[in-house]
Image (cartoon, rainbow, N blue to C red; front, side, top):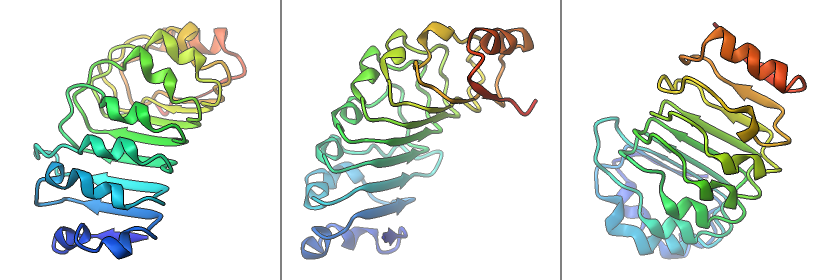
Length: 195
């Protein structure tokens, strides 16, 4: 895995020969504009795992070129200043694990169901108010974490993926009654609630 701290991050995009063999990449707290290096991400043609973390007060944005990394199976995006779910994520056909944490997005697009291979989705510490209806079509999704989404006050069980095995709802503002309703309608679903 290529793990880059902010002090040597800039050199990453200059090492094109090294990039072509990298399968795991971690960039934490970049102190430069990632968008400036958008096309350089395409040099990572074998990348399977990408971890990107920004400072909570940063205005850094991930370039849409990352959506062209068709080999990507695991993507973690922490603390980037997104108000809307990035559409380029929907272009990753082989994505199996997605962590999207610490953003201001209030909703997911109906097109989220395009991520047909997604097995695990951690949508945490966002401003999500409800789930899109299309999520029930995500047949491979078995793990869904909605922890730290304090604007989420209800979950329509009809929208939950049909093969979902585990749902994390704590901490959140879901009422006990709401949690009981989920368990009643989806008795085979493991609902993790630490309240």
